Length: 190
Image 1 (tube, rainbow, N blue to C red):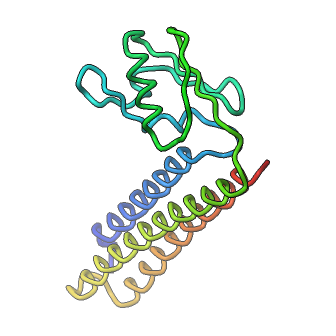
Image 2 (cartoon, one colour):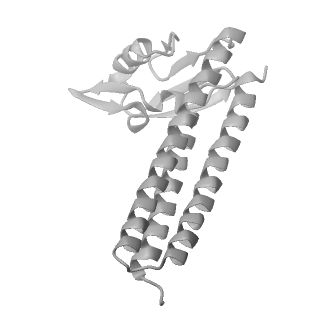
């Protein structure tokens, strides 16, 4: 039996989508604070920019000159108050201060309790990523089973391809687990 184009398309598609699921988890991890603050912490904050809610990173440069300090430099000085208000209203629990040019956002050192909360949070994010990868596996396996039932691929080919999908799944779940271990140790590092 020759290669059925649909089969390689299913495999290629599931791998690409699993890779995207892992990238999503990696991006979510960036928004969780470790002992050292990252500009990504402020990325998701939306600022009222002339009536439109706009992500902060579209309105300003965000940098981390010190481990517990972020500096926000708006491109439009007229919105400094709106940026300060958006940061204050976020769930970060920080108080920004401005000198009219830039906004300084000092972060308190993490308590042990807060670190443990963050570890739980990234654990939940990782589990959501693993569930997404497993759902993609199930979807791919169903498509392969349909091809087998339509007699487009043999029983042996179906078993081979299901194993291939499982190997891809294991690879991406392992990637998520490695990212989780790394992030947990960054959070717990004092």
